[in-house]
Figure 1: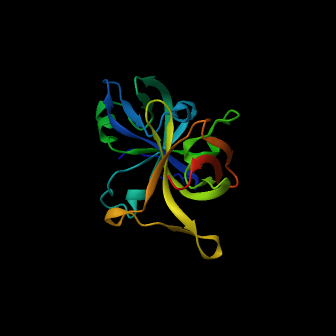
Figure 2: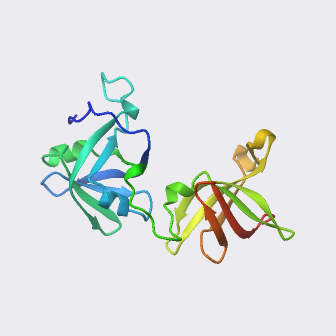
Length: 205
């Protein structure tokens, strides 16, 4: 597989997409971003790629990240296409199919006021309204793009001992979940550092 495997990956890598195919004959690849916030991939001059399966003879290769210099990148409909130094031709690009694409969180461009990177919302505790008071709904597990706006997939939870969350069981052994629109009409305040989101969503919903 291509080089650049001697570089040490930063500890704050965030997975932002997956290479789905080669693009053209000049070594470009096509990437499916994990969210609508593809501007991070467009702005970053360097990505880190992780193989979808272990590489023979490379211990721990399934989680080993390879540095990739981005020579060019642009949007192509709902996807991105990019030219990387790891793929000098189409064969090299084909070999990268299935690799996940990661970027250091420290390289994310600053977000505008009242705008948030979806990755920063994951792990936040969502509070809603119960009898006119703020009360915990649960923890954000994922942010989904429904085409019109973002939706928070929240695991219902209660605060247990020492402030730890205990997720509430649902059907089939899965955690009980609720979907909450991440829109100004329902979200009143977001504290990324405090990992807390205030909303008017009914706790009993």
